[in-house]
Amino acid sequence: MQTVIRVVLMYFMVWGAFRIMGKRELSRMSPLELVLLLFIPQLFSRALTRQDYSFTNALIGASTLLSLVFLSSALSYRFRGVAYVMVPKPTVLIENGRFIDQALHEERITRRDVFDAMQKSGIVDLDEVRWAVLQSDGSIAVVPAEHRSDQSGGVMHGAHRGG
Image (cartoon, rainbow, N blue to C red; front, side):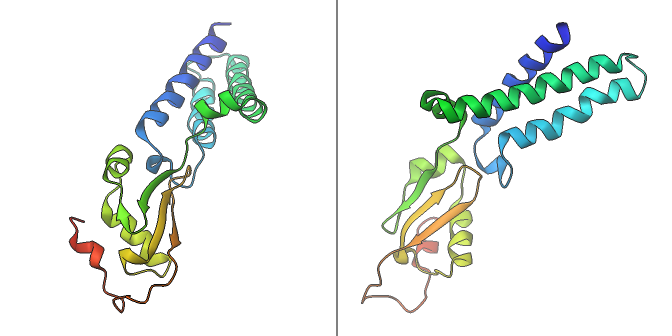
C-alpha cells in the first residue's frame, strides 16, 4: 500500500509541475505520455538492479500509475470540471496583427518563436496574422487574416516591434 501512495503523490507532483511550467515544455507530448515515459523505467529500475528484490512492488507501482493515467483520462472525458483543471487551454498570442504581451509573458514565449511559426505557415508580415494560438501540445497555430489591399510585399514589420 505504501507503493501505491508514493506513486499517487509523485503523479500529482509531476502533473502539477508541468501545469506550472507551461505548454511549451511539453511540446509534442501530452503530460500523461511524459509521466509514463519518466515513471515506468524508474519503477522497474530498483527491481532490475536488485536494490529492491520485490518485482511485485514494481508491478504494483506501474499498475497504479497506469490506473491513474486511465482514471485521469476517463474523468476528464466525463466531467467538464475535471477537464478544465487537467487539460491545458490554448492561449491567444496574436490577435488581428497585434501581440498580446501578457499572454507571451505568462507562457514564456518569445516573439521570435511566434515569427518562426508564422514563417512555417507562409506568413511573413505580422499584419497578415488574424490569430496566433499556443496549443495545448506546445505548438503555435497561425490563422491568416483576410487579404488586405495595403500589404507590404513581404516585409516582416513585426520583427521591429521589440521582437
